[in-house]
Amino acid sequence: MAAFRPLGEAVRANLNNGDVVAFEGFTHLIPHAAAHEAIRQRFTDLTLVRMTPDIIYDQMIGMGMARKLIFSYAGNPGVGLLRRFRDSVENGWPHSVELEEHSHAAMANAYEAGAAGLPCAIFRGYLGAELAKVNKNIKGITCPFTGEELAAVPALRPDVTFIHAQKADRKGNVLIEGITGIQKEAVLAAKRAVVTVEEKVGELDTHPNACVLPHWTLDAVCVVPGGAHPSYASGYYARDNAAYLDWDRIAADRDGFLAWMKTNVLGSSPKAFAGRVADLRGKA
Amino acid sequence: MIETGYTADEMMTVAASRALTSDDVCFVGIGAPSAACNIARLTHAPDITLIYESGTIGTAPDVLPLSIGDGELCDTALSTVSTPEMFRYWLQGGRITIGFLGAAQLDRFGNINTTVIGDYRKPATRLPGGGGAPEIASSSRQVYITMKQSTRGMVEKVDFITSFGHGEGGDHRQRLGVTTKGPALLITDLAIWKPHPDTKEFTVVSMHPGVTQADVQASCGWTVRFADTITTTPAPTELELTTFRDLKARTKAAHAGTKRTGEAV
Image (cartoon, rainbow over all chains, first blue to last red; front, side, top):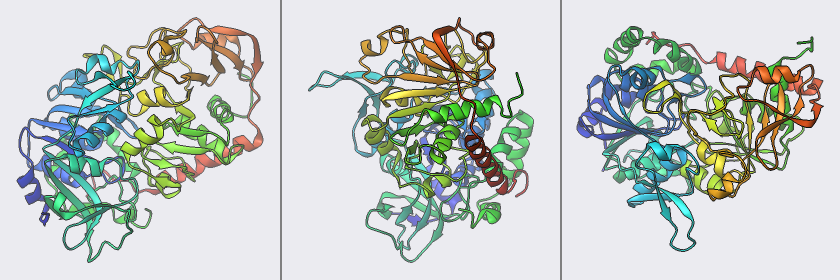
């Protein structure tokens, strides 16, 4: 049963050192506020799962919180490479992170298998691709009916998944609209789930096929307006493309990165997000 | 280069756009492929279906997206589906006629590396990785590739095969049980290349106006094979150039329109 809780409390109650955790969002609805709260609470030894680790995982890796990364595309979308991630992989700063690297198709199938309660996902993939040579969790399996050789990867079952969504009704049922990505699967695959939302409304006022997560699939719902910034929330505010471009400069050196984190994350709070999207409202 | 009134980048993108038709269902990579696909849609291929891996089907963006999941793509799409549905039903299900990819590193057989420069375990440069590309390369009915030529990018041997092209050439795809056609076209800023029917090695079939064979060779890391008959790529038309430049101007204005943030809270 979902309880409306302040974000700080929800993160403290649901995330532990050493957890396998997914902060999911496919460009849209990325849970930046939840990730920043996890950074403020200084969790360590995390296995970070995400198809498209971008700024938030760059920040967590740079802050030394990650033990392992399970991912399929580690870039700053439309801008370039992730500099803190690169510094960890290439130079071991602040420390090396174990990589379990997949393709998007594999990750999507693996989350779906997790949500479906299956031990693994089977799909047609990795044909000729060398990831299969460097990731022991990519295996082959023969179709018992046709003999076709297919790929198999373990199901993803995070200890906890964090996502951001548009709104929750008074009971805590959550509506996700627009590019829904992998969020529904990531929530249903996880042991615990926390959702930040733009607003709490009386009724969701939606249509029968909408992407709704019933309140009883969630552990906590937190109202954090602007909580996806600099990602966007369709119907609320636009993507802050300039912030993604800026991140490339901010993350370029270790001292600049740490100074930015101190000011904008460690010394900030979930309340700051509403102000960050003020100028982006009405553009979504 | 002779004075042409257009840039090599414009020639490349326009040439790539011409390879697409209204009947195509195209899985669009970000960057140069995205620009080419949208010029096609805005000129000679108005009914082309553009699909981005964020789940948007039949999208018609007014400005080029900065990322594959910009709101513009969803707002203008016929339908937006979840990520598993995108990769399972639409890509793996065989609905995509053309996967349009870029490449950090490419070899003569269309194998693409977007993972690492150097050794995987101790890379000189860690690149973003495959994303959707490994399965776009194997499940799309055919693959088009577009990239700017350089000896760093077009190499004798890629450091890592992120997305399989024709492997070692010949029938390597069939030997691995891959039933799709694979890389069928390469459009660079200097030339148009097609795989040799037997060896599958990319072969120059057309050079852009003013480009010489020496130019193509100088910016390519393998010994280039030229077709017996090489045509000259028609220069961009007024409509193609105007469409591309207007699209770029709209895109620039839109992306500058979002506020600058950073230190300010």
